Length: 137
Figure 1 (tube, rainbow, N blue to C red):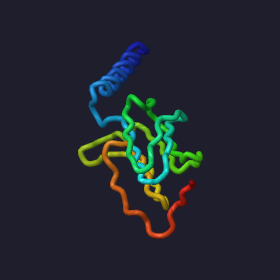
Figure 2: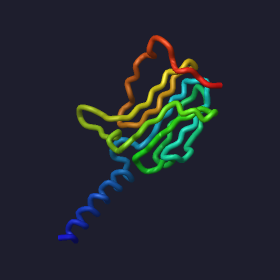
Figure 3: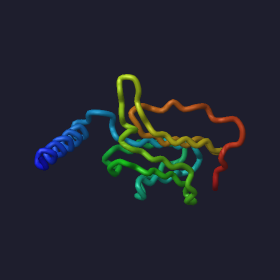
């Protein structure tokens, strides 16, 4: 019985690995849209991954990222945490009627920061009226 259970688990793991290698399913990537006038450093699971320059976007592909789950943090050059996001396999699930995803959105006085991972691009609201998050120098 143990041998059968082990073989079933091994077969399931092989299918998951094959799907990743063959590119089936949504790609495991992370998008950072930095519409602010600040450089933003991005860490994933505590490791420095990228610095996204002011008013640019950056796509980080699977080869640049650790295995899921991800704990993503975005910080200013001064070290201030401005956004964080947790991403699991569930963010990459796509069905006939819906697609999952994970998004962090921050509207600041100096622009908008969007961090996104998932099966479909997010639909983003307009910036809110009223006071926005201040920017640091």
